[in-house]
Length: 515
Ligand SMILES: O=C(O)CCC(=O)C(=O)O
Ligand SMILES: [Fe+2]
Image (cartoon, rainbow, N blue to C red; front, side):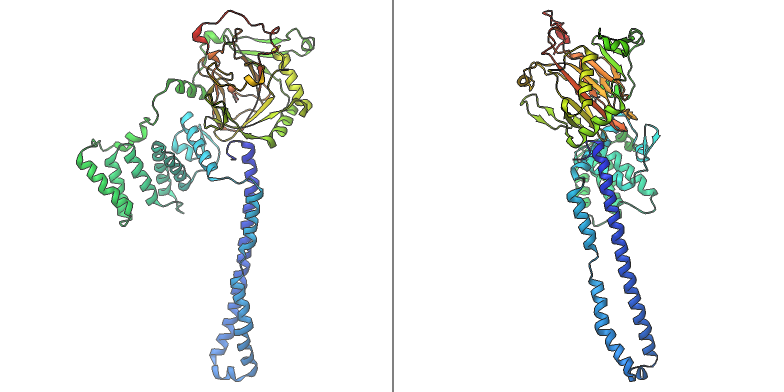
């Protein structure tokens, strides 16, 4: 699929260029054909009119007799053959070529892209009308959505059993349709979705009103007729309680589509930048130059900012150059695969809606820039990278995200690190390889911290206590990207090899901090 990474979506534009070009060629070919036929018709008309002025003397002329017969035999065959010439063949050949050899989106992509818009709408609390106007958080980006675009978002939500968003988008489609000069969708279809979703959301009276409206427009609508009878019977039975007249607004503002979940709310508030650390904690955070007793670093020490204390989160500035970023992106792009997650029960890697991005692993000896970055991780952290995983490069597409998770493997999990023989993921270094226009923060919901991507910086934290127990406060997530492209690289450092660099202790942290 292509919707999971922006790098792939860029390629779609190349495919679209081929489609547009082929379509234009096809139109030109059809136009040429019609022009030619018009010319024939013109000539026939002229000759024919001349003949009918004086039929007898016309056919009396042997040359006229000859041309009349010729017109209706060989000439006419040419007309027929022109009419039956299929100029769509070249066009179809181009399209098949594009479909086979170029990136082409599927229905699954459409579903994923629509789900991403809905996710962004929820996480960033975007209002439907503004979104349809092409505004993201007050910033106007793309051109507007048509009634048909909104209708499709509603239809996709409906297919996912999400009637709350079906209503939001069908209402928007209806609103837009009323203002459209060239109607892009059928009002009856909108009404049908609106009526049924309204019923599903529990407002049977309004569902009946909408169905009646639909029947006024299309009195023969079989499904609507059936539903009307059903709704009327249900209302008769009184199994649905009547609501007031302004129930329309009731449904829209009723956010009961999700049961309240405080963790989720904290995560989303952090993504929106609404939760920040208290001032007394921020005042304790320091910035410093770090040399880690490394003579090379005396000349160019790392600029390190502390983003949280206990667990300690550090931000290293300017630790990946533009040239390195370019190399790493170029090496990773052809290797991209949909990012997987490990099923904690089976241990299998699988794709999941909660992690949407594309990722690739880069080996140290693929390029000197990869080796340099690995070495830098060692200098930054003072830990050994010989037992670390390869560099993982990640690109997030529309609404791409990674929901709250731990980077380390928990005690109760079937874990794939066992086979590596290098122990658990003791620490994470997360390089930001792009700025992100809007959204895309890395957030730590338990400690209430958000890190905002800045090209060339890296975040570093320990996932494990010195005892080897996992630190539950390191739970973190990648918020959905609202606008822009997000690129990161992960370097996961393992326990083996750090025995003298970060000696383990027998002292255990309190139970409520571990997992
Ligand atoms: O992209 C981010 O901000 C975080 C990514 C992450 O947590 C991961 O890949 O494990
Ligand atoms: Fe992570």
